[in-house]
Length: 256
Image 1 (cartoon, rainbow, N blue to C red):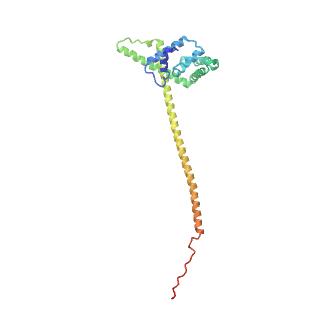
Image 2: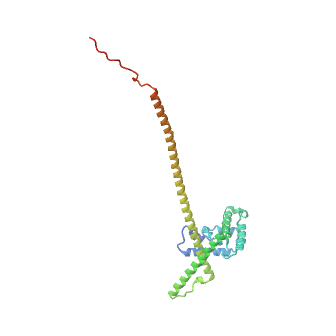
Image 3: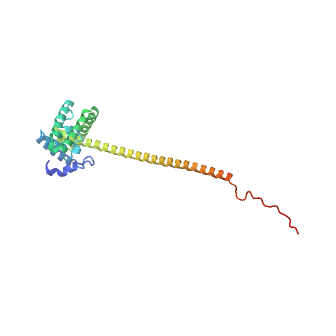
């Protein structure tokens, strides 16, 4: 990757957290990436690893079609063949000089294949593609309408198939990023909710334990108090109280 693109790469490495402010940044980055991929149409193992771990990969790898470099309309059988070829290329055993990065790339490819081989998750990905196309068509229609209203030529650059494909690609990546943000938000809310629930459970358990301990101590002290009282009562009945057995002499009249 060209060193002059470092700043734009940094911007896109955090796309999930903060959407781009200017679409031009994405367009520039996309163009550069595609030029490199075109130049390296038959990627070597190192080039595939570099591609999958390039700056901004967290953002790009949300799209399983992008990871496996296949079109959304590609048959599952062809996708499977592509997956096998790529997984062999980046397998850690085949890249002993770069095992750690190869393992990361291998896991990315496996994750993309698991998404596309499952009917449900692949259908959701296709829904994203269709929504991207619909939104792109709407955006272009509004663009043509605006140009016509301004009395300008209503022809636009996206009328070219390659430019249109690029526009759909940009919208697709943004939608995948939106989905990931929502997923993370839901996961964080769920985690916080489970955390609060567990804290409440711990609090209730501690309260119940304290109550149980208090009740136990109370019962033990109650039994001691009862036994002490019985002992006291028994001792009171069996013991003569000083002075109780003494009879004073009868009074005699004084003789003179």
